[in-house]
Amino acid sequence: MKFKVYITRKLPLEVIEKLSHIYDLKTWDYEDLPVPREILKEEIKEVDGLFCLLTETIDKEMLQQASKLKVISNMAVGYNNIDVEEATKRGIAVTNTPGVLTETTADLTFALLMGTARRINEAEKFLREGKWKTWSPMLLTGQDINGATLGVIGFGRIGEAVAKRAKGFNMRILYYNRNRKLEKERELEIEYRDLNELLRESDFICILTPYTPQTKNLISYEQFKMMKKDAVLINTSRGGVVNENALYSALANKQIWGAGLDVFEEEPLPVHNQLRELSNVVLTPHIGSASIKTRFKMANLAADNLIQVLSEKTNEYIVNPEYASENR
Image 1 (cartoon, rainbow, N blue to C red):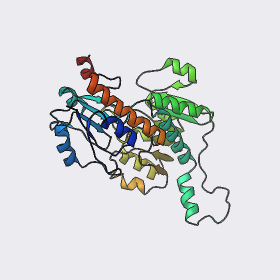
Image 2: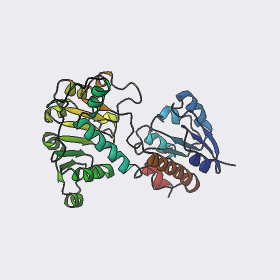
Image 3: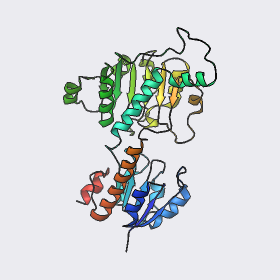
Image 4: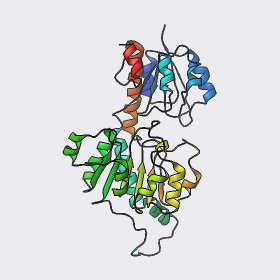
């Protein structure tokens, strides 16, 4: 008898075909809409494998319905949408898709940095609305990137990739990480700082740390007070790392110069209404990994993860080590 697998979103045909040859497959086929929670609660009751996205909340209540579930394959690097502890208790492996989206997310991070620094969103709106009447010396002036100081909070794969891009702009690079990376300091000529020092010294601050209980609201009211008046904050990690009310206050009161955000505390809605009203913040709808090539790689990796766990009970991308150690 074939294992049953449920996919929570429409995927590329090649990925669907790969899985349908092996499993009894069922898919939520509405590409732009997440599967409703009540439908997923019914579907999860009978499946051995779940292929999901960050848009699905797989919490304790959901997992209580999943009497047969063996693996949750999350098509993302992050997995804070899943109650990993509860999954482990129930003998369910949880996998993610790291690595394949590093360069693409670094591209988007630096694009937000450049777009915010040079006020691209404001300039485009200004032109499209027919407001451009003449050249003016101080019209839509922004911040220089070349030679500025970049602070990277969370120096994993993506943080390193962003630092390499910053080198091309002759930026001085500071970083804060849970563990110092002495080899990378020598290789990339970067400098370690504690968090408060980094916030005080940096012209641009890129947040690239995972979302954990320790990093929730890592950047809040006190941290904004430490930043330069002309600082630019970029967040492409997870929304909850930045307190959005504190960010709004800092931007509205010109406590910092600007921000670029690809992630939010609540996604897709409601994105902080007051933030959307500000001109000094660039907002994108969680498109950090949204290149055609990368999204295909993510989908294929998530499919491969699911296949390997169901066939071998192991996989290098299992994020709950207790499950992994019990099933060696």
